[in-house]
Length: 341
Ligand SMILES: Nc1ncnc2c1ncn2[C@@H]1O[C@H](COP(=O)(O)OP(=O)(O)OP(=O)(O)O)[C@@H](O)[C@H]1O
Image (cartoon, rainbow, N blue to C red; front, side, top):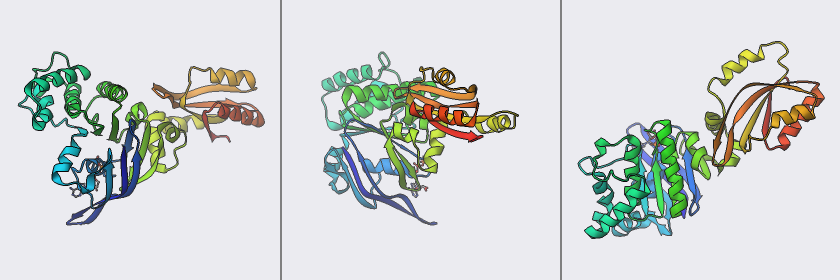
């Protein structure tokens, strides 16, 4: 659905050239939810804005839904953009227009009749869960509702691709979840390809099928979300994975525990998309002559299963502990011996 070849954007500034996007090759499949994660300045916004040519590439190619976006005439580009909806962190709504009028805006530009506009707007209001709010003004809505208007407006022309530029970054965690649920729902119902950029790994974990990690204009790692969580390779990726799998206070609390006498082996068990309902710890204690105490942990449920880390201390003969560790690994739980190994 989307192919980027050797895509680059260089900004020429007073302080020199900035390679915001540096020769990126990337393929995004039809119907997938693809996430790009990176810290501020990594080049995510520039990258996503080149998908619909809001930003013109310095070099390289952008193909979206079979169209070479980088080489289209102005008129053809206008047509092509109708197939690409976009939502923004700060919603970009027209404040003097009602919800219904905001959603109708792209239809007006396209020259759709008043009657058809109304029909389509009603459908969209229903789709995004804003029934009864068509006559409200953006200032009368919550952040989550404003983003629902943004989504409805982006979908007005039946696009094939939806671009989400930090779409939940201005929202609280609960509202973020409801907007992400809506995006999953739309992806399933309409078969829409969704590309989102974010600096928050829980957004990736919650809804993306695949993810690319960006650093200094380059993609340093990419793959299926589950694989990336299971085996992050790059330091940057490991940092992002930790955002989700480790409680913030881990290091300090663990250092404190490691000073204790007789702490034994300390293991970090990382669950990635597996089934935490399974009584793994009970299982291990029954099978092997070891004692286990749980030190701390953070496990959360998502559509891919359970994610999180559990820190445990294991006491027993060294050889038995090794066997127990091997057994846990066989259950597709990652194990790192962080003390006593
Ligand atoms: N219009 C511009 N002119 C000059 N430099 C720019 C311009 N836009 C972006 N940059 C630079 O390009 C680099 C990438 O910026 P970009 O906004 O794409 O990153 P980002 O990952 O989206 O970060 P953020 O989330 O903070 O926007 C940064 O160094 C930024 O300063």
